[in-house]
Image 1: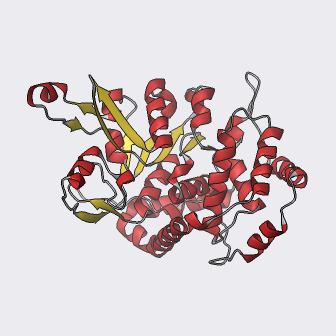
Image 2 (image 1 turned 180 degrees about the horizontal axis):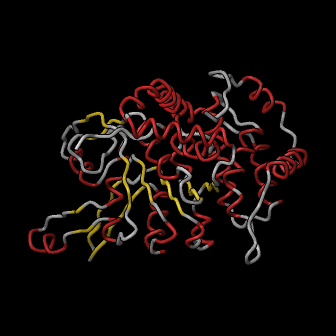
Image 3 (image 1 turned 135 degrees about the vertical axis):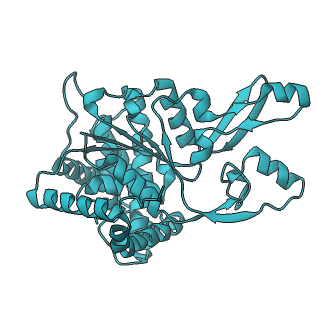
Length: 371
């Protein structure tokens, strides 16, 4: 069976907020994933598959089933750590970023993997059978109809996405491996919603609706027909745009550690979340991480109000308190007004902080995240 090219990410019409959320998670998988809610036929799964296809290649330990990163001990599984301790040199090889699809019927053992207790007792050997989290390490884990998964399985996924490690313990025996991945969950709200506790643990959330502009709808049909007629030809036509976006994501990833923020930025974020009566502190942390990723994407080494605003658009709507049968709504104008007010109330920066901000260089021309 021929290997059919995935639909190009840059060929997706509209849905800019969804594309922005996915790209920012690709730049910083520490953000914690994105939940895409929307009606059928709004390119949710198409976008997730397309993102994985354009992500830059990664360097992995060649003979490790966990795609360990030999660049540091923190990125290694227990097996690779033991090999290093014995003085072995870990062979490496480049590999494309994996797209791993989690089935709705997945059990806990299928997700986290299993330890062979019998082998451990009889032979004294620790043998671990990798699960979905192992396959997804340093890749993209896609969970369709996440609202139909068992809550316990969703908890496991979100825990691993937050901690970046999977630890399995059975009968006093344990095994751990890195589990750093871009988590993308999709769901149709008509089929039921997630519990608020689980909803809050998805870092970003995008609500999607079908495009109503006739010209854009025509473009969607034309591109889809062209793709189905000649997938390879259609892919080659969009390849220059795909390569450019892939390179921009790689540059933003390398720039991310240099991005800084001020105490005033933190105060602004705190005031913003407080004004919307958001529970807990997860939203504040996610806004900061997302704002830093957006600044890196825009080619800057310091966050500004626009970064915070765009981050809040993706972080707050699914965390707003609402009454039964009431939809959580927050328009851009309302958010911008709250941000302006929060900035006014934030403590003034010191002269030293202002000097640092004025000296922050723009590495590349600022660009909109929309494509």
